[in-house]
Length: 198
Image (tube, rainbow, N blue to C red):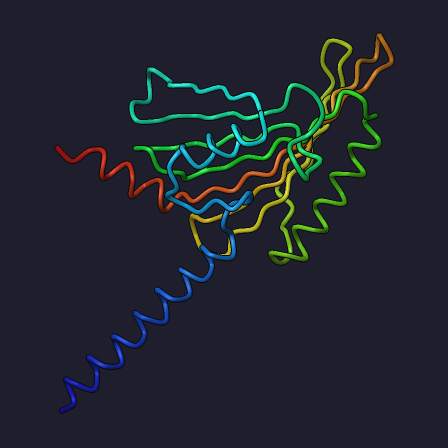
């Protein structure tokens, strides 16, 4: 009787832990209606429907990896201020999605304001972001300033928001861009193990 009670308690704990991880993964699902494990076809269909340019990379040193980058010829992705989206697929299944924000028409100050706006939006949707790093480097008349923030509700499942600004001191110009990265490292590790099997 006592062994059965411990078994039921252990099963309940495992179910709660699994449900917590599943809920966290659902909270950090990638945007554009995608889910972890989706095939590249979903992104390809979306790109075709909106007449977007699509580039597929097959890195020779990483068998099984496919990188799809989608961007418009000009302007932004539909219903966003993003310039491009990049999906990483291992064994034909999505484990990382990066949304790139750049705008050749916008000043660095405007891009920084957009970054702050997105940071607040992400924090309100997913919870407080933790500061990763802030750096400033000067080299060959270029000043590079970076800052990044992340959220990791479950180990291995995170989003990262990274901003980079480059100032050309000689030409007195600045350029800024930022990216929002959704990554499921736990799923990536599972996929790598599957690919190792004969």
